[in-house]
Length: 187
Length: 201
Image (cartoon, rainbow over all chains, first blue to last red):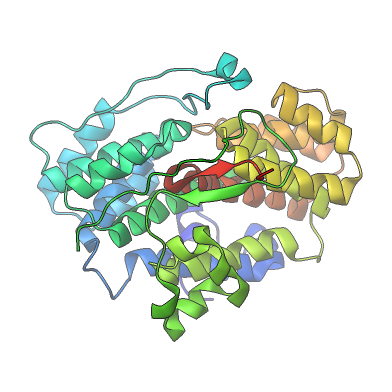
């Protein structure tokens, strides 16, 4: 069995019982790994650089308070950027999901929480990505075209926004699978 | 080319959770069909998805789209072992109800009803939210899916114990984890790249 990032992050032995159970859904396991590769070993990087990818992933994992996963993605970052991202994640800590529904009967369920804005020192393109990532992690139902416009205004292309969105969304999946498997391993 | 967001007008947005079939309108320009290459078709997986604005927008990054779609298909459609299909769909609907994705909840509530024939219970999940009483086994699946979906995740040994007490084996519990986790992926794309619309007429 070749390297599997979810097994690695969950601390599962490749020949252990949970790794074997994951093989009941072998395609899901292989394609989760292929998803990781498509985002972090991509060959086309014109719309989102590898450094941006690892910086956003580090931030998203830190917002989930998962130090193992955050450290895994931070390894690819220069030290000063890793420190910046860690500082920004600390500023962005919250609990989710919260947010507003389209006006109507569900408005009774609207909840609010902290809206994060990156520090002035963060480069504008990365700042826009972190702002968007924070919204996607904690208050996804507040999404609007204005959030996408803010990314376009900061220099993101439409294709880059798709990649950024997939990356944050994939991390939201990966972090939960890892958390679930770790819990099972300890239960 | 100056890129811009799309302003969707003249449609009705759903304001309640529903099992009805909804449409979805993109906030960014989908990839042009005439420019699809072999790599894009591979990312779409099913050629029919070239008719979907959602998949055509995601086709801008075809490799992650293809891997996403194949992950999704195995978690939900693989008939072998694990959790019955109805309850995988329940996990998806519960995550979507918590996160507030009216579109995703509509699709997977409909599938949960189809496979379980428990449309009234599924509707209670939509109407009352994730605290609705759906009987002990479904309550355990919903509670585990919700706890896993919260940020940070609250899924713990008590959820595993509750699922085991309802007869779920390890493979079935991994299906709950995969199903709920996957909808934390899907909800974030559906909610942030466009909006749902009620069927016209």
